[in-house]
Image 1 (cartoon, rainbow, N blue to C red):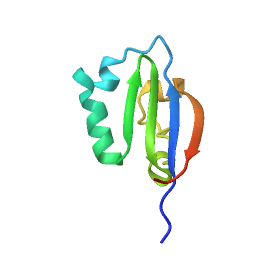
Image 2 (cartoon, rainbow, N blue to C red; image 1 turned 180 degrees about the horizontal axis):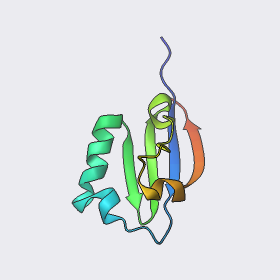
Image 3 (cartoon, rainbow, N blue to C red; image 1 turned 45 degrees about the horizontal axis):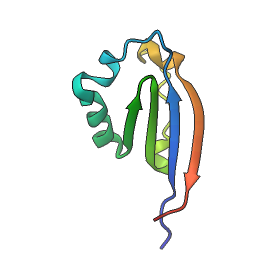
Image 4 (cartoon, rainbow, N blue to C red; image 1 turned 90 degrees about the vertical axis):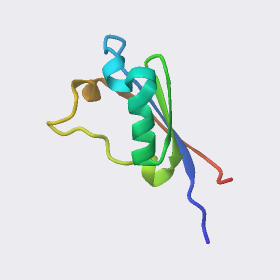
Length: 85
């Protein structure tokens, strides 16, 4: 049986984006996303890191017409792999 590969994806949000609507009070929105996407999300300032199994972290970016305006302002620094544990 093969184990899924754990990867990390870093996203930098534009400094002029207000974070409270995105992250939620006390990061409530992040906790909801973690639960729904089955990934670990850490926000440090305007840098957001996603860590989890490759299929979950690599889901297509939400770039539809219904996406919030900050989606187009994110700068993805890509994903890095780490060995399964």
